[in-house]
Image (tube, rainbow, N blue to C red; front, side, top):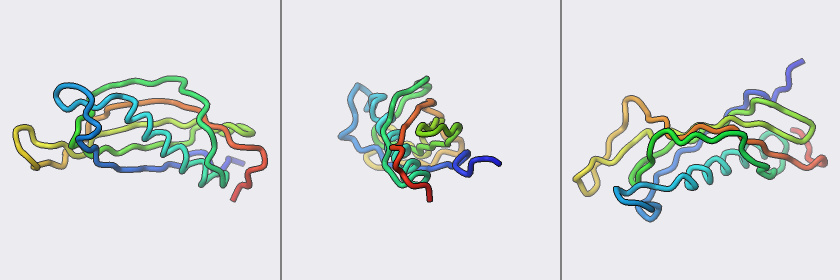
Length: 132
């Protein structure tokens, strides 16, 4: 029988404020997105094991396109492997809205979201966690 936790997907959306701009052109550093992956992983652990869990590490991280202040990013995580205490999660982050250059506040919904980061990570949960 298949584990019901496999395939569980959690999606978060977040506006990227200008306080996160770290480089010229209002670019945001990659650590910002990795932090969002951590938030998604925490929700996954709560849903699957009733515990916040701990992030162990990444097997891979690919930075594919820039994130800019003023963007709205959609971050997604899906459980791809379930061990006794470990959970492997695949992550993606996409820009779904982008500010219009040269304007003070105009922004646009992107017809084709921009894939910015792709990663695979592992979390662990305590052996005493209760599965709902």
